[in-house]
Length: 626
Ligand code: MG
Ligand code: MG
Image (cartoon, rainbow, N blue to C red):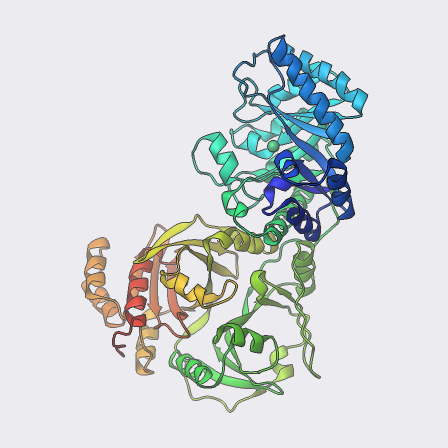
């Protein structure tokens, strides 16, 4: 199937849009008339410019307020306008135009009246070699349902008149997409796709400002597209997305997100809908992440020593060193943390850009090769570094913003054996930390959709509803993604004055700001940490007084929590306990969590108190030690 995107979906000038759309991998573009009018080139030159990019013009749109006008000058003028647009389309080099249902105040209703108008328009279009597709706008004056639009097309009964379907107009009005299955596929001339978040508001406003890429919102675009394919449609699938955030973004990333969303959607449709196996090339299915294999810090000198001391206070032991690189492996339970002080390679360049921080994440999957193949089909760049002798070649990709993601599987040689020399056994008994519960990436609010699409299109992960976290200096939005062996929280900062925003301002991309380790016994862990001199993030007495009033906790439990600065939360599924480290490396921190029962959250109600405590410390108050 051909992939397409409307020029209006991508920011920039027409030329910037086309560059980005072609580079992202699309086959074609819908020309949104305004984008064309704003360009200085002639219609022929614009058409040539598009074809020079290897793109085809899949559709010209929109032609408005055509049908249902009373006989007389208004109706005559509508046909004159159509004739001029058909001539223009001939010069541009495209044969399909979108007519959206009328919102004209003088338009009259009646299926047959509209059908007669389209029969006449079909005859005119045929003389120009043009096809006309009719789309029901969700807010059309008389036609706002694809079933009515189809009835008009059916009664017009002209080979040059067909139907255009738009997932937003069908799903946004809550219409059953399965009604599309009964429409003959060859009468559907074009299909536009968009998603949207479930926010109740005026349909027109919602459509013009909040559409997003399939998979980024809450509409069931997959069910819609399955119905379209089941009807037998095999023409282009095209994104038509109006979004304020995207308009303010950069052309390249928006176009790449669009391509990623479209490939993931069509792969889902191909797998789910019988008879659709060949609508697009076979790509590997989403990978289930089994766990976090390693987190790699880039660091240097004193900062690296401080990080090692912090890990030691958390019960980690330095268990091995890389045979050829300045790379130390710290371990506890199933958690592996690397501290990379190698100057020359990727870690070194990340260190130069932003100092100590996480530069690489290793994820355990069933097949690393399949994961990379899917990521590349979705538009990700492979990540390659020259291998030194004896180094294991671990498949990797670039995340958004240039970060690195490596994929480990059981078919690979054991990299820890192959590349590392064990250190003498440590005396530490650890602190009962077992594995990585989650890590949190901080980004601008505008990047959150990109990152959630990146993860959910590549891995089997589900999104939780977005939650707002109050920082004393602004709002941070938090979106959790969870799969079996991987939980990630994405935090979108709107101002640099928030704790997350200040951390982000000093970094590139969407850095990991905190890592949460799991324990099975938070009180035992707390006691071990205290004995090791771990510096807890101090919580206020007010916090514990409030805990007593919010939850019916035994006084001695609250006393134990307070003694070790342990935070508490509870939901219908179970209980949650948290310990935070003090901030390091410009605002990073570690967290230790215990989940009891089926608690699925991340302690969001505690976040404002955690942030306030971190800010008190970052402003230079005395750092108490346990
Ligand atoms: Mg549309
Ligand atoms: Mg957390």
